[in-house]
Amino acid sequence: MLTVHHLGRSQSERIVWLCEELDLPYELKVYDRDPVTILAPPEYKALHPIGAAPVITDGGLVLAESGAIVEYIIGRHGNGRLALGPDHPSFADYLSWFHYANGTLQPSMGRSMYVARLNLPADNPIAVNLAGRLARAIGLVEARCAAVPWLAGAEFTAADIMTVFSLTTMRLFLPVDLAPYPAIRAYLARVGARPAYQRAMAKGDPGFAPMLG
Image 1 (cartoon, rainbow, N blue to C red):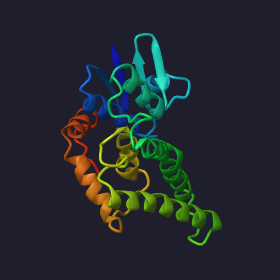
Image 2: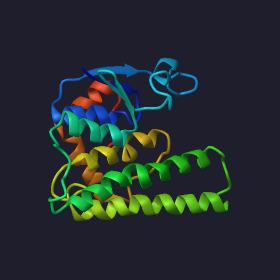
Image 3: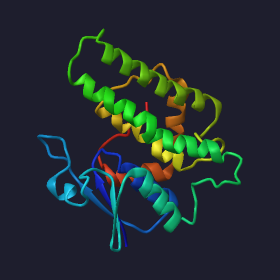
Image 4: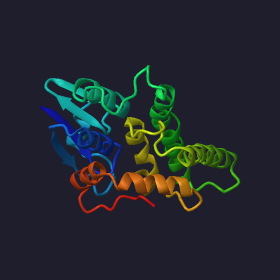
């Protein structure tokens, strides 16, 4: 049985959402963050040597890393659905945006989060550099969302599943005002209208209103 180990308000929401989009049978185990440290509890950290979310188990397999998990589930359980193959005209766009999520966007937000906690002066060169990187990273998503309905193009794909966390729940840890990004806000409205997304968030983070605006 495929089991999704979901740490509340974390990147593992991607995996719950993927399973709901694919309409897969799976077991969901939800773990609460430590109320003091806001980190994963010991029983979650014990699942995998990296000690971070997400993690799945599938029989004797234990697998971490969002991208690897998404590709594994699509390939092993999803019959390739929500991925675009080499013969698809949007294949390169799909690959680019699938990897942009954790290759550029999420790291930019993570670095900015840590620097923000240092309370550096606004004109500190590191803070200025990271703010510029983050603005460019989000700006590229804005431009893409203004051009096409979904990140790979006309079709909703796993590239969207990989990206949305950084634009929504991650803002609990690094507040980002989306007012200057109307195309992203319209894109998130489309995401929020998807029944599978609604089910995933209700199951994984009950009582938490998705940050779609």
